[in-house]
Structures are given as structure tokens and as C-alpha cells.
Image 1 (spheres, rainbow, N blue to C red):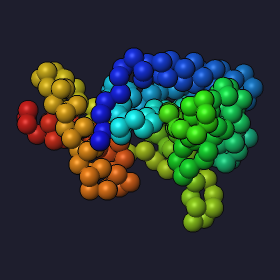
Image 2 (cartoon, rainbow, N blue to C red):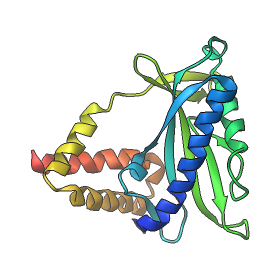
Image 3 (cartoon, helix red, strand yellow):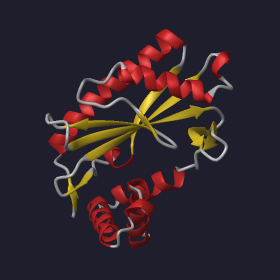
Image 4 (cartoon, rainbow, N blue to C red):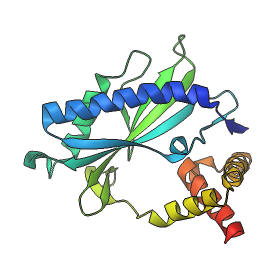
Length: 209
């Protein structure tokens, strides 16, 4: 059953990741002339990190590229390799080296016995240029491409309205209830955390309109 992770525990890992991601940003600029900024996204950004029982929890980050040398403009696969190799050299021995998925790099931290997964963080690579585009692996074509990220201003407006109405506790309750509902229905894979968060915000927003 899902429950919220203690903020103190999240803070320890978030502090570590913030330090690593800051060093990543500086090395990308110093060594590859790639300028960027980093944002914590998803449930971590809203202090709503959950875990299933004593299972692991995770944090999600975007590294947003704001300027690239011309040689990288049409080489998204090379960019992903540079980010992964740089991060591999920055994380400590608790973490496995970056595992590439369709749209992010995943770093896994295990307990001392190296068997039990306790934490992970995901890094998505975003290109900022007249909108935002996420670097993804098109497995059908076996190539890396930039996919436009849907504009989310309306979601932020709804969240702000809920906070102004002093109803954010309702979002936290709805989010946890929805996570556990999908867990019971064995539908977690079809309902990632961000999708559940959007659903919780929309659900509560309807009650304050």
C-alpha cells in the first residue's frame, strides 16, 4: 500500500541529487559548452513522494538545455551519451551507472548488501527552443529524436487556485487514494505518478470552481 515518505528522508536524497545535478550542469558547460538548468519535477517538486510499503522511492529531474554548440544540434544520441557518461562519473558507489529508457536515464541506489533497491532518480533531457522538446529513443526507428512537451500552464494555474483556496491537503489525499486504487487494480504501469498527480489536481479543482 502506498504511503508518503517522510520529508526528512526525501530531503537527504534530494540534497545529494541537487549537488550531483549542479555539478553535471557545470561540467557540461565547462567541457562541452552546453548550457543548461536543472529542475526537480513530479511528486518530488510538490513534496508528495510515495513508496509502496518498505519499497524504494524515486525523484525525477529535467536537465533543460538552453544552448548547444552547432556540432550537437543534429546529434541527439551523442548528447544523451555525453550526459550519461558525465553523470556516471559524478554519482557515488551506491548507484548503478545510468540505465537508458525510452525517455530518461535511471540511477539506482541499493542498500549495503547490494540486493535491496532503496532509491532511484531519473533524468530526462529537455531542449528549450521555441518550446520544450524531450529527448526520446524511438525504438521502432532505432534513433533518438526530440518530441515536443505538451504545454502545462493550465495545470499550474489549477494547482495555484487550489493552494489559494487552502485545499492542497485534498490534493495530497486524492493523490494517495488514486495511487492505491491503481495498485489494487494492478494498473500502475498505465498510471505513472505524474498522470496520477494531474488526475488528483483536476479532481480537487472541480470541487473549488
